[in-house]
Length: 69
Image (cartoon, rainbow, N blue to C red; front, side, top):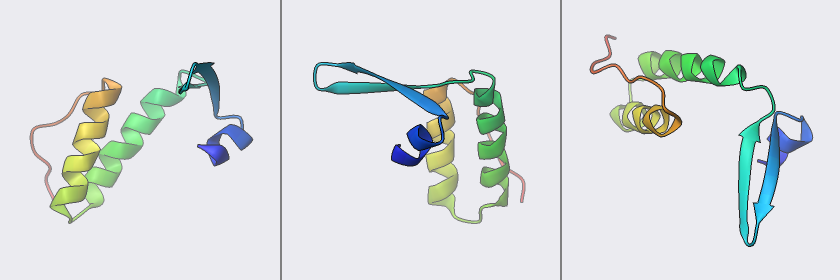
């Protein structure tokens, strides 16, 4: 997160002990979801593919049911 903050990609909001981050450019979210789809398709590691699917679900992105290699 330090690198993302340093490059002004995210900004933070503190609430007590919690820190919440958000993208400075909301349009970047669709680009990131596209990038995760590409990474999932290029990966031969099932654990990595599942981790990417979970991340997209958490971010609200659509997740395809299968990946063709």
